[in-house]
Amino acid sequence: MKTFIAAVCLVASLIAAPARAEDFALGAEAESGESQKSNTDTDLRFVKNRHGAVLYLMLGNNSLNLDSLNSRLSANGYSTIEKNFVMFGVGGHAVMDDWICGGEFHWMNQQKTSSGAYDLYVNGGYFLINGGYVVRRSDSYMIYPMAGIGLGTLSLNIQSTAAPTFDEALANPKSGTQLTHTSVVFNVAVAADGLSPVIHAGGSLHMPFTFGFRAGYLFSTPVGGWQSMEGNANGGPDLSFSGPYLQVIVGLGFMIG
Image 1 (cartoon, helix red, strand yellow):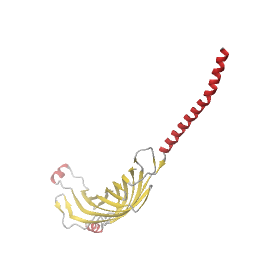
Image 2 (spheres, helix red, strand yellow):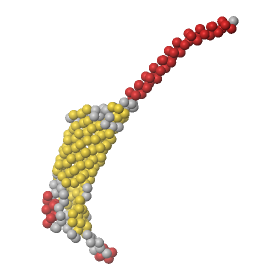
Image 3 (cartoon, helix red, strand yellow):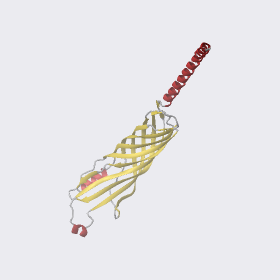
Image 4 (tube, helix red, strand yellow):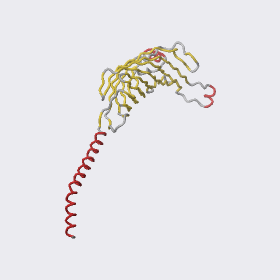
């Protein structure tokens, strides 16, 4: 009897063995499929760049028309100002199919000149609202012309080089002045933006790094002439933000798709 039971158990185990092997194979295949799907879902790839936004930092060089201002500075004993300014900026734009719409703000590196008795510091900046239209693109780049309008301000801060005593400062508190000039600024440019590939892990929002290049020209027209702390400074020289510029940008995109 014991021998018969043992034989039955042996036969049953032999019958069940292939089924267990098949289950194991199916489980391994399913696990492999999940792994492949996971790897597919996290591929490094470029994303569609037709809808989203981009934020960036900007660095460039602007060449301004300062001939009239430099002539007046020279006539009053000051050394002239370099017309080329290093510009720092921040900006961003939205991407809506082929349309680009955004804004940016730029400020100049400060320059200094002197007449001996006084130091003169020159600084300023401008902001622009821009629009553009994409003329060539792939998932990794966009090329588009753009145009914009904004306001720009240049400031001259004049300070005495002599340090007054306390009593001298009380007797003659005005040891310097500030002159400002505001202009309406117009911008025309060509832009090329690149987008890095991203790890695609599902979802519709992707954040590629962006890098780009701008080449353009600024035009300007004055608004109200020169102003001092006391009011209008009549008889000031012409000043123009007009001139070519080059810029590079580095930032982060937020693309939907």
